[in-house]
Length: 164
Length: 87
Image 1 (tube, rainbow over the protein chains, first blue to last red):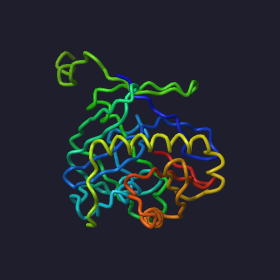
Image 2: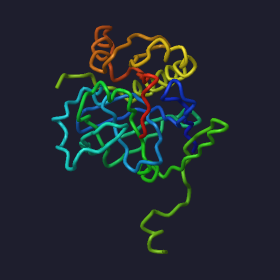
Image 3: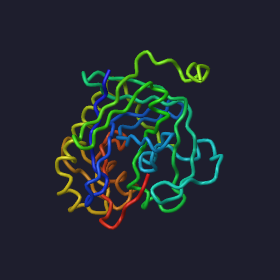
């Protein structure tokens, strides 16, 4: 199974392209739903919902558990991380069929400073998403081609660790 | 918390498909839109810009004023030329 990705720009004056997945996010515990797009970021382990998307979901931060760590730096801004449990991500595969993946949790970002400054920061899918979903990322920036592909016949990480 | 309508799986697929088309529309016009909406965030529905704002709160209000659900509208921001960040 392949999941096509768009190659999109974040910065108007830069020829910098990023692999992007259009998806919906459901947070059943909070009756949350959102259609958005997420940047596939292999430099980041966790996945996170950007402040602008949290705002659109219309779930107050007070509904989420309190942050358990100091703020993290993302996009030059400090953010508190609230963790939302039970997440369902849906997206389209190359046959335009809907595919659904459940994650145990996702980070919900709250900008420490002005939300206005955080409006350019996108929602991110990190390597944890690829791991949990059993997906690998193919990205050829020169050909502007990117997709996710289901990894077949790969034993779970725990088995691999034992063999080592 | 404001009550919002539940989204069925059928609606979800329709919303996602529309969002993909709107994202492609913005990609195709990225240069033009980034010039016209520099530093702003826009909302797009059915390949048409329905709102542009300086803040996400303002954008959400503009979307609601059009009787649309902000959760189902494609949004995109255009950072000012002098803003670059690392994720």
